[in-house]
Image 1 (spheres, helix red, strand yellow):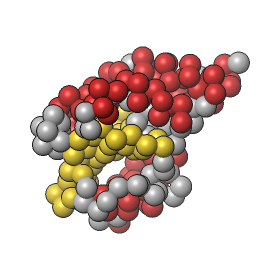
Image 2 (tube, helix red, strand yellow):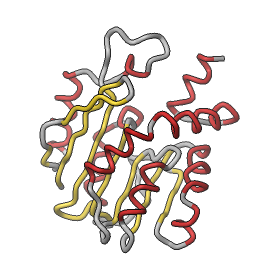
Image 3 (cartoon, rainbow, N blue to C red):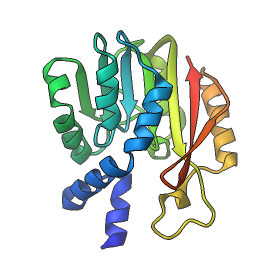
Length: 205
C-alpha cells in the first residue's frame, strides 16, 4: 500500500492520487511559501507554473498578482481538479487559467508571462531541454524563472523523497541546460525545509 501511494507523487491518479494530493498540500506548504517569496510576483505580473500540483503556489501568486494573472499546466487530472477547487474564485474572476498539459508543449502564446516557476517537476519533463525552450518562449524578455528541486540525501530512508533528489553534479548540469536554452541563471540558493534541502535557481530570460 505504501509503495503504491509513494508512486503516486510522480503523477497522481485515481483514489490514491486524491490522497497524494492532500498529502502534498500539507507537506509542501512551507516550500511553496518560500518559492513564492523568491519569485516575488507583483500586482501586474503574469505568472505561469509548470506542475502546479494541488495549487498552493497558484493561490499565493494569485493573491499577489491582483491586476495580472496566474496560469499553469500539470500532467495529472487529479491535481488539476484539486488546484481548480482551491483556486475557484480566481478562475471565476478570470485571473487563473489551469490546464492539464505538458512542459514540453505549453498551450500559451509567445511572451505571455513575466514570471515562471517549477517546483520538483523538472525530472518529469521529457526531455528537460524542450521544457526550458518552451518556458523561454512564453516568458517576456527580462522575465524571471524559478526552478526549485529537492536535493539528494544519500542516507534517505525508503520512503524519503530525498532519495531521488538532485545531486550537485545534476544541479551543475541544469545550470548548463539553462544557459543553453537562452537563460542567464544565478547560482542556486539552498534552504532546509521540513527535513529536506531544496535548491532554487533564479534565471532571467
